Every structure is written in C-alpha cells, then in structure tokens.
Amino acid sequence: MPRSVFSSLEMIRKLVSYDTTSRDSNLALIDFVRGYLKEYGVESELFYDTEKRKANLFATLGPRDRGGVMLSGHTDVVPVDGQDWSSDPFTIVERDGKLFGRGTCDMKSFVAIALALVPEFLARPLKTPIHLAFSYDEEVGCVGVRSMIAALASRPIRPACCIVGEPTLMKPVIAHKGKISVRCTVRGLESHSALTHLGVNAVEAAAEVIAYLKGMARRRRDHGPFDHQFAPPYTTVHTGVVQGGTALNIVPKDCSFVFEFRTLPGDPPEPLLEEVKRFAAGLVPEMQAVSAETGISFEILTSTPGLNEAPNSEVAELVYALSGANDAGKVSFGTEAGLFQEVAIPTIVCGPGSIDEAHRPNEFVALDQVRQCEAFLRRLIDRVAA
Ligand SMILES: [Zn+2]
Image (cartoon, rainbow, N blue to C red; front, side, top):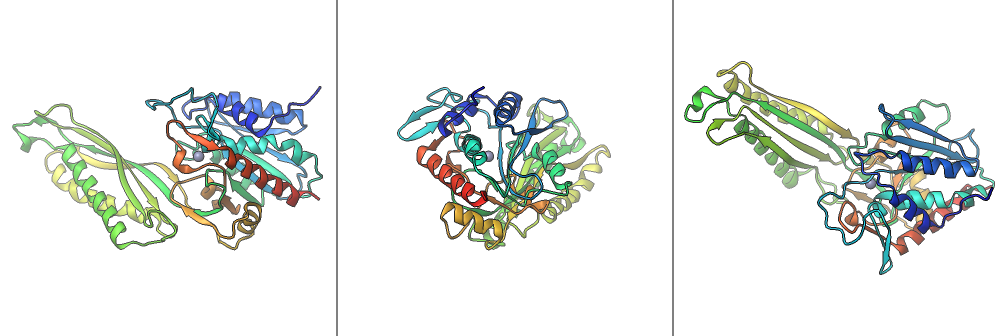
C-alpha cells in the first residue's frame, strides 16, 4: 500500500483542520498521527487522561537503546470564542506569504513539519534516535504532558535532550518564567447593608488582598530582582478575574478571585504566596470577631516551573548549530520546557512563528518561518544520521 506523503504545508493544513481546543478531545488528531506513523512502521505510545478523551503521543524514530533528541509540541489550541476571525479558523488560508488558522503559530506548524519530515528521517540510518512527544492541555497550565514526562523520567533510557517548538521565530530560547495561578476565596457573612456591623464584607476583604498583591507587583517592578533579558525584566503579579456580591443593599458573603505570579528563574513563587497568605491571615481576626465561620483560603490551580538552561549546554550548542544563531534569548511566556528540565532532560525552546500572533484572531505563521523550520530539522537529520 502506498504510504501517505505530506508536504509541510499539507500537514499544517491537516493538523489545523482538527479543532483541538483544550476543552475538547484531541483524539481525532492523535489517531491520525498514530495512523500516519504506523504506515512508516513507527509505533506510538499513548498516555490518556483519566476520562480517555485526550492523549499524549510518544514515538521514537531510529534506535531505541539510547538517548536521542526529543521534538516536543502541544496539540491543543486556545478557543476562538468571541474572536473576530476573517476566515474559518480551522481551514488554512494562505495570503501574503502567511498561513492563517488557529494553531498555525501556537504550535501545530512545528508538530506538522516534524511529522512531514518523518519519511526523510527514516530514509537515513539514524545513529541517534528522534523522539516525537505531542501533548494535550498545554494551554490550560501544562497539565496534560505531566503523565508522559513521569513515564519517560522513570525509564532507564530516556531522551538526552528536548527541543520544544513553541513560537520563537526559530531563535533559541534558554529560559522562560515560571508561573503559578492561585484562587483566593473569601467567606464573609451576609447582612442588610444598613447594618454593616453585623456582616463581614467578603468583597472588601478580597479587595484588600488584591491591593496588597498590586503592591507586591509594584515592589518587584521598582526594586527587582531583575533579569534584563526578559521583557518585562522582573517577576509579575496579576489578578485576572474577580467574582463577588449580589446586590448593593446586601453585605456580600462570598468573593473569590484568581491571580498569578510569573516568576524569574531564581525568584521562586513559594515565598511570594506565603507573603500574601500572611497578609490575608492578618485580616481574619477582625472578620472572625463577627463570625467564626468567616475566613480566607488559597488554592493553587496550576504551577509550572520556569526554564533556565545554561547558554553553553550541549543542547543549547546543538540548537545554535541547527538554527544558525550564536546566542539565545529569554521569554516571559511559559511552556512545557521547564517540566522537562525538572526531570533532568536538558531543554531549549525553538519553533516557527511569533508569540505575538498566538492566541489572537487571524493567527498566522509566515511561510518563511515554515521554510526555516524545515531547514532546521533537515540539519538535525544530518546530525543524527550515521
Ligand atoms: Zn503554545
């Protein structure tokens, strides 16, 4: 039976056609990838979520008895809800040297180009294996990939290094910020708003905590620590959503809000969280003097480590050679790279497209970026072939 052959563009078109918004299943895409690899005699290993609605896929090209280079990408995309697209987000439109579609830059193009080049990898006797690691639920806090990483980390033979193809305009990125997202829930006590002394105002308590967080943000902005290779060059603190209160004439019983710390390497989030918890604890005695049922609690929603790879590490040198760059940058957006580094798989981020286009309506990848990524991976083939 003739095997399927895709150009990079055809493969990008194919992958983008699967609506893999994080809240939905990615299995149709994963099944397609598994079937395609199988045509080339490459077996895929799947790591499912608990409901078997989503899966990570791991596959190895070449020898299985040694480390190798892992090419990593996420298959999920952010929602298009409420975005004003000028064409169907799941149908590639080529215009002005760009491919428009959801996931073109973040980050199906890297995954697609790696897949399109599988026949070229396999046509050469590989002395170093290439691993393909495709995840789900990256966009909701790098949640999905963790089961695959745990499995890889427990094996006697594991990938020697990893390239995460998030959009960096094909420039090597050796560091990114870490992130934790936290929900704060304030429980107060309802009363008539004319009788504020009988109630505990949850919205006001939340507001004090939020204002304190803003103060922490200003302190980091003005006094650091700083790393000027990041933009912005300091740890950021941000409150994104607040919910609380029902009517002006009711002292509100409930209020909750979500906030995040995006931390520089070397500025761990735990002390920041402890600091805001300490501040909140200082508000509680006044609340509990009215009712013992009241209080303030914190729940970590997601926690993703930052990436901090040495600029002269082996994987960095490899990616410089493949990309033609002679130095590396640092970025503020998070990726799965920090999770790989956490299990001692040296990792660099380098992929086609610009993060500026990610998550936006009319997301695109420039054709020139696609060509650069192809050239990058073909140089990799030359390096790993015997
Ligand atoms: Zn991404």
